[in-house]
Amino acid sequence: MEKAGLYIHIPFCERKCHYCDFTSIPGNKDLKDRYEEYLIREILLASSIYGNLKIETVFIGGGTPSVIHENSIRRIMNTIRRCFTLDSDAEVTIEINPGTLTVDKAKIYRESGINRASVGIQSMDDGILKRIGRIHNEQQVKDTLKILRLAGFENINGDLMFGLPHQSLKDFMETLEKTMLLDLEHISMYGLILEEETLLYNWYNRGLVSMPTEDEERDMYHTGIDFLESKGFRQYEISNLSREGFECRHNLGYWRLESYIGLGLSSHSSMGGRRYWNHSGFSNYFNKLDAGDLPIEGEEIISNDLLEAEYLILGIRLKEGLSIEDYEKRFKLSFMGKYGEVIHRHEASGLIELIDGRIKLTRKGMDLSNQVEIDFLP
Ligand SMILES: C[S@@+](CC[C@H](N)C(=O)[O-])C[C@H]1O[C@@H](n2cnc3c(N)ncnc32)[C@H](O)[C@@H]1O
Ligand code: SF4
Image (cartoon, rainbow, N blue to C red; front, side, top):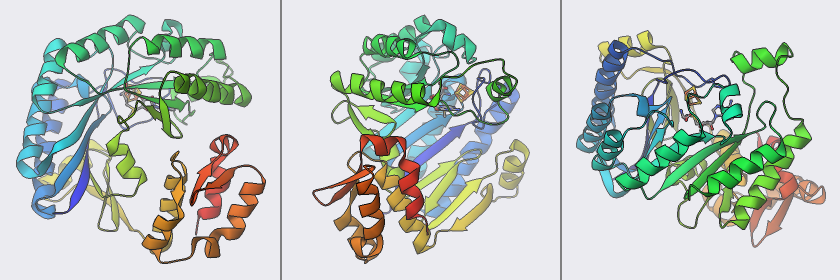
């Protein structure tokens, strides 16, 4: 049976954060109810097209999945289970925003088979949380963790951001110290990207907020990683660290180019060498499903050259690096024959190292990974 990861997009948030350009809007009850109906239809339609896939990981992301009613999440999970073969050992994650979780929600998530929670902490500093437009404060992060543990969640990720407006290294380290008290299994640490058309981008361009310099931002990243490693976390990807055995299997699937189906507004899929993505506007999404079609907006056929570039670019971002043997098996080419010059050049400038048949980014290479990645493009 063919295996795949499954992503489900919930495009609703209580309010838009100042930095975020993900596909999500506040949405009223009618729109949320309608979306649920169409999402269910899409799951049924996809399963009739793909047949009985074995789903090894599910990721319910957003937006903020925890803003919709817990019964909707239960219905989505039941439909997934009915339509596909959900592995008994599947990793099933839901994204949660502090301030939106209740004891009932957490209980129903667990009953529905969800076994991993990803909490958008971002910062443990109330001033910073307010400045970036989060709906919650530090206390609500702690309350969320308490509810999740009581409901029996034993695998919890916290998303943190650094390089935030007016944030110093000391501020970020305080957030990390406080995060340690939450006793998480996994931490994702993202440097803020100033996305065009966000409020924060606009304020920055008008000189209304000041951002850390690039050096300060890099300092937060490296000091943060060192601190987390000193506390027993292992970095396994540029932005991801976990306790032993708690790496996110769903994301590892993306980075290792395994198949995945994305259902819901704006989600992406990669099946059988074909990539496609869904409409990101509600009316197009609904209309396509009304016509009995999958709500696909566009697709690209992945050429061998592109597949190879993606394999190298995503693979080198993993701490384990790229296996030359695996590459050669997969692409039937000599790695050094094709990339020897590139590898030696970046080795000489200290961006990568070759250890036990694997190419890995050095600490410097982690900062300048795009200089290496560009040489893998076809
Ligand atoms: C898909 S978002 C949804 C998470 C959830 N809605 C929340 O905010 O709590 C996943 C993560 O991406 C990160 N993120 C979102 N916008 C970002 C940006 N502009 N730059 C860097 N990281 C960002 C945040 O850490 C966020 O938790
Ligand atoms: S960061 Fe999360 S909560 Fe904030 S707008 Fe984006 S998806 Fe919604």
